[in-house]
Length: 88
Image (cartoon, rainbow, N blue to C red; front, side, top):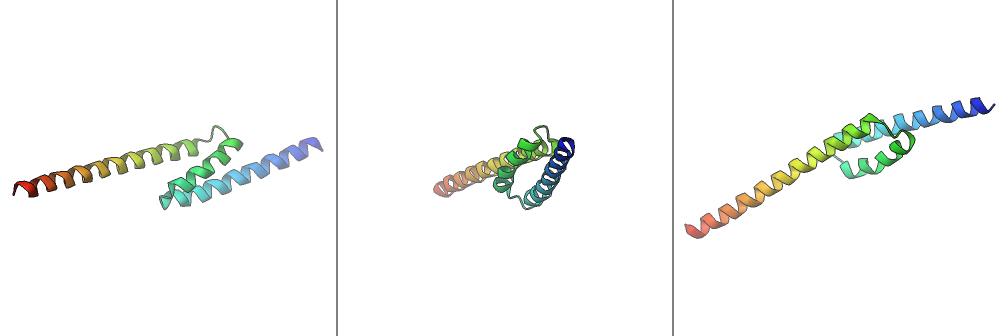
């Protein structure tokens, strides 16, 4: 009876991880990173070695770095444009 209960609990946890992965996959496609990150901890509490979460974390870090670089480039362009207009 104990073994069956434990197997049922494990199956339920696996279904929950699969459900979360599907939900997070949609969030990642829509670039809703903050919401996705909030769900990572639930997967990691069930499956600490989950490779999909690690992949998504790297993807989010890359997207944020790209966003930071683009913001910096925009700031520099605006600064250059402002100085150029002062000269002309």
